[in-house]
Length: 159
Image 1 (tube, one colour):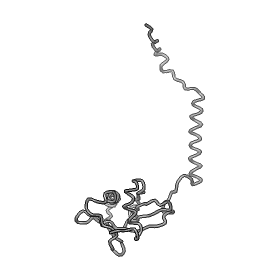
Image 2 (image 1 turned 90 degrees about the horizontal axis):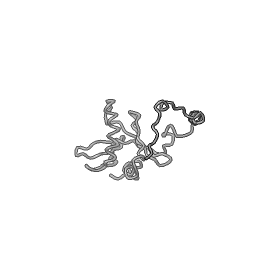
Image 3 (image 1 turned 90 degrees about the vertical axis):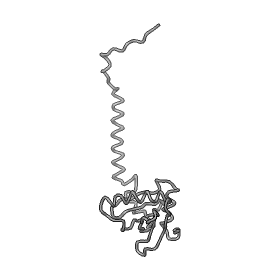
Image 4 (image 1 turned 180 degrees about the vertical axis):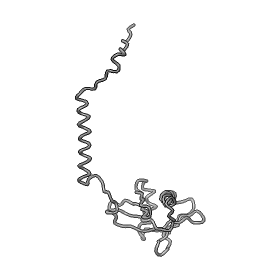
């Protein structure tokens, strides 16, 4: 029976990576820093202000009904835009409560309107102009976005 040789503990701490490997890692880091810097300087990569591509928007006031419903109104006319019965509109309820939390922390009431935007690439964004917070709704899937999509255009709304 043959036994594997026992490693010499004197050599266990003597690790020297190959010089070529260190140079390759350094070159990669340098290339990454230069590429990111060039992209930022040239303004590439992403749109920094989604408002520039907003093609439609609608101000909306969201209220909690006494029965647990979600009531959406036009902030100027106070006309009913949409009413989700209790136990429905779960995604709308969750999204708006997350934005309302920031308002409560800043001492802002529920009166000021939120703004729902549709962008050039047909994405929906809900913005709170009072706090500066916004949420890209498309990140949560088509079924969830469909509920907000009903609110963006008066022709698509259903009370």
